[in-house]
Amino acid sequence: MNFAKTTLFGAALAMGLSATAGAAITATYGWEDGGTILGNYGDIIAENTADAARSGTAGLKLTDDAATGTPQAYAAFITGLAEGDTIEVTVYAKDLPGIDGNGGRIWGHYGGDANDINVYDGSASGLGSYSDADWTELTYSWTMAAEKENFILEFRTYNNPGDGAFFDDLSITVSNDNAIINIPTVIPEPASLALLGLSGLMMLRRRK
Image (cartoon, rainbow, N blue to C red; front, top):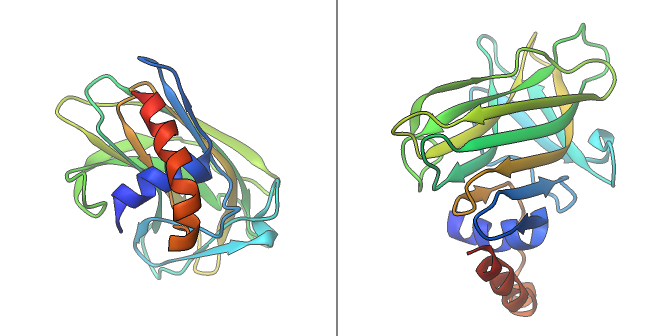
């Protein structure tokens, strides 16, 4: 994964990124561009589908495909953080049809390498409640621990293989406007980048 590209065009163009100097930044994402996840731990199936749309035309469908354990889908990778920074997340989730509750929830862990989402550096814990049969707002706030600089937002699935949850309308607010929020956007083709690049660069410069 080229996180430099994801930051430039994902954050500036696909997410809807807003900030003022010295303040928080907020990123929103609704899977409208065809993205799914940034990575995963354990066996999980991620699909971009209209069936998962709470708003707009698409959302994320996660299906548990693990015989044991709790699979994790990496929904965001935030780098450039410092001790005491806060990360506030809101996303809407709904159990896949036909399961008996607890389809999914949000969790987090620290990353040990800003260039590699797969380097684990300890659990950050997460929300105790789960999705339900109807769209449920899942909200949680993390505070960065000492000597931690990177954070991975997880969407977890529970119960049995074939169970899971829909996710849509993700919002992430970080208190440090020097942080970089990577999300699972689809990178535009080169021809599109030529048209969009200037406006994207201007938006990122206004973040400083």
